[in-house]
Amino acid sequence: MTSQDDGRNSFVRGMTIGAIIGAIVAGSSLWSRRRNRRQPPRLEGAADAEVARDVSPPAPTETVEQR
Image (cartoon, one colour):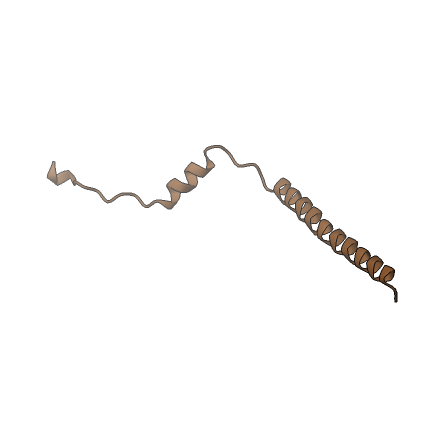
């Protein structure tokens, strides 16, 4: 094996690793776009309604008898 063969092997190995990493990044991007398209759009007040639903009502500070 000559030093030229080592250089070619190193080049091919680097290109292969780069192609695999590029495919992973591209696939991840496509998967994210597909997942975002499938989710229904949120209404503007939906976040406020969810927060209001999660908060328990405050305890009453005065009763009818105290007035």
